Figure 1: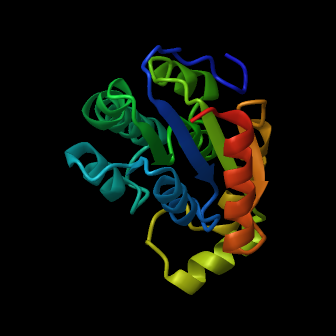
Figure 2 (figure 1 turned 90 degrees about the vertical axis):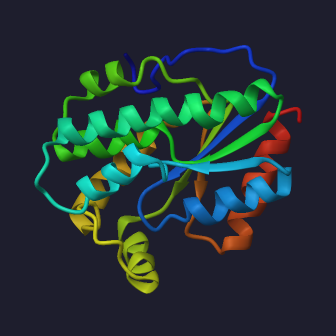
Amino acid sequence: MDENLGVKERDYPGTFIVVEGADGAGTTTQSKKLAEKLEAEWTFEPTDKRIGVKVDEMISSEDHSPETVALGFAADRMAHLEDRVIPWLKEGKTVVSDRYYHSSLVYQPVMGADREWIDGLNKETLKPDLTFILDISAEIGMERVDERGRDGNIFEDLSFQEKVVKRYRRLENESTILVDASNSEEEVFKEINSRVEQNIDL
């Protein structure tokens, strides 16, 4: 598969929007603001379900291989789709997710997993209508992480995040939009909201 990953199309009446980015980019803040603006359902990965909680535990240490971590994320993602995203889309709702399969396409290969194998794990996921990648330098991202307090996961490392940022930038296409996240929270949201209005008929 190419860098954009040809995941499954679907015909549910709802709209699926994803917000992605490196650590400290502001994905949680911006996805919540967008969900509130659109009166949409907000969700996140890894989830707070059993598999997602286990994944959070796995990335708090280096005890697990990149492949094991990737399998955990993929399992949590499929359960996430089945339990939350698809039911909402079937009801015609707009869904905004803080992270999705793009995180696996970026983070696990940086950990050392094979990118084509990661693609295969995620081939049954649904294609979002629109994805925003909050683009920020690794230095600024880690400064923000330090300001808010670290989560203690294995990704909170400057050299790791530099590779993450580079991989995210490769994912840009007509339905995956890079937004400069070094600007203020308000400016970033203004750009996201403008792009939603340009690209999606809600």
